Every structure is written in C-alpha cells, then in structure tokens.
Image (cartoon, rainbow, N blue to C red; front, side, top):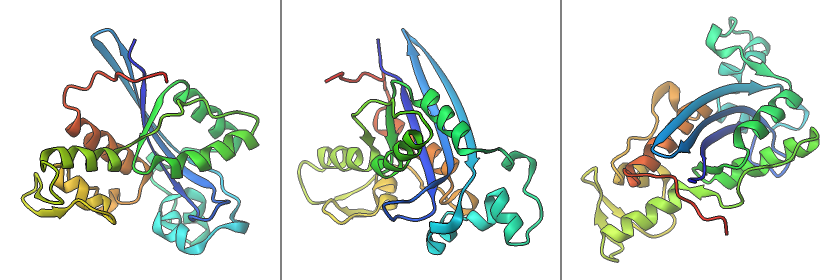
Length: 215
C-alpha cells in the first residue's frame, strides 16, 4: 500500500529555537489502490506573544491575517474564511490526526516539523508522521541536476539559466522546474505555500504513486 503524503506549511513567530506556530495548512493525500483521496485544512493557532520576534511576525503577516493580530493592530474583523482560530491543544490534536502515518512534504520541512513536534508534546500529543521528510527544494536540485547531465549551470523550464550549486533560492529552483512561486496575497501564507509545495512536487513526479520506503 502506498504511504499517504501531507503537503504542509506553517507560519511561525520567528526563526529562533523557541519559535511558535500561529498558522497551519495541510493537504493530505491518501492512496487506495488506483484511487486517490485528497483533503485540505487550514487554521490559525492561538499565540502567546511574550517571546515572539516582531520581524518574524511581520514576515508572515500576523498583524494583517491572524484574527488576534488584526484586532491588536486596529484592523477590521477578518473575513469569514479567516476566523478559524484553534486553541493550541485543539490545534495539536488536529495536526496529529492529519499527519498520522504520513510522509511530510514541504520546503525545508524540518523547520515546520521541529516547531510542530514541540507543540504536540507540550499539549500531550506526539509527532506521528514518518521520519523520512520530503524536501521539495532538495528534490528539485536532484531533478535539475539529472536534466543538466551533471553540469553546474543549465537552462530551466522557465528559460532562465540557473546555477545548481549552493546557496540557492527556492523561488529560482521552483521556476527552473516550471512552477511559479506564490505571489501577492498568497506569499508567505501557510495555505499558499502548502499548495505551492504540492504543485512543485507533482511537477517533478507527474506519475506520482506515493510509493515510499518504511526503512
């Protein structure tokens, strides 16, 4: 049986070791023979701001998108589709349920799973996803190197020349694979980035069957 996948992204209150998650988006793909079932969820998480990094909050748009952030910053109430705020305990329960037994797919997914694992354990739950994380950026580098016949420079699917050596930018790798990164209001949002990761993954695995090792 093919392993389920969860395309995941979070927004956090910084990049410091004690960072906390305030937005989560997950797209779960389950395989049953030749059929595929896909579900999507998105929610905000209640956040204690005392140890938050102001810059980190701005990058993800906390003051513009999180209902509590909008209220604090004096903005009008959030649109109806952005009012799903879960207490940390309920959020942890949902994350464990949605990721149970799945391979997490993300852009540097360890950044997300490290913060999520801390939250789950603090709330009496545990990480239940597969220990093999799938990083679309690393996957893209290998995919592009295969197409470049080992050369360090190549012309990507977008017609631009890209250097396949670190450091690289996720946007450049994505475009080289033929996938446009999120723009405008979708930029640095959990749902926008989760959908981007899924599209990017599928572009490199057009006949994806979800196979994965249990090693």
